[in-house]
Image 1 (tube, rainbow, N blue to C red):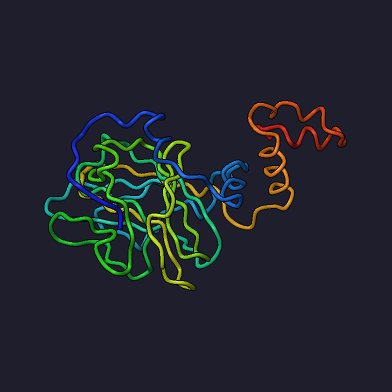
Image 2: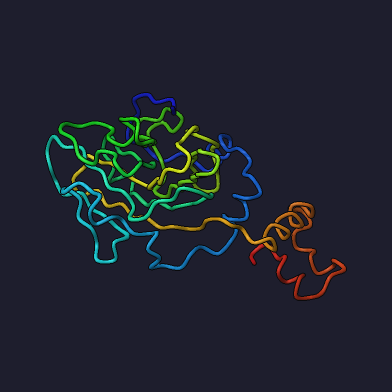
Length: 243
């Protein structure tokens, strides 16, 4: 489990502070992060209309949920679609100003409780879910930027997180194999609005893997010298960093 301790509302950490906590990404994940994201409207970006607390209201596009004011209640919602294999990345947008206490991002099985009396970290509070409580993780001093990426490797049974450009490695391991897992959040704050977006998943294209390998071999100092490589022009263009 993540190491948690009481935090305070404060500014988000700087990019340099985030980078000191980062670990290298695998080639598989790097390709995914550098590929064009899935287009808007994909159903894997939808919150579920049925697997959610009655205190969550869905937007017409189903990509955003808002918790209605409710006292002494902890409330959760799952994505409409889960995965049981492959590597997948979702973006979760949740303003720090709208989190309050017990704001949790993670994944859950299909039968994880989504409503409970009182205030608690509902997601991750039982054996069927895993979550990161944003407000109390001591590494962050009470400040996590708006955009958090969920990195779920259902094949390896691991869950990790990214903030800005920094990947912080495996937060949870030994997740159940062959079991459908869903991105999920839980909140106790009235007015909290949370947006979900599916970015990418397996399998990465072989061409993209080759491109990443060549770019890494060139290194940052020579990344703009692809036009000097003894290969056809169309391949030189493909290898440009922004492609």
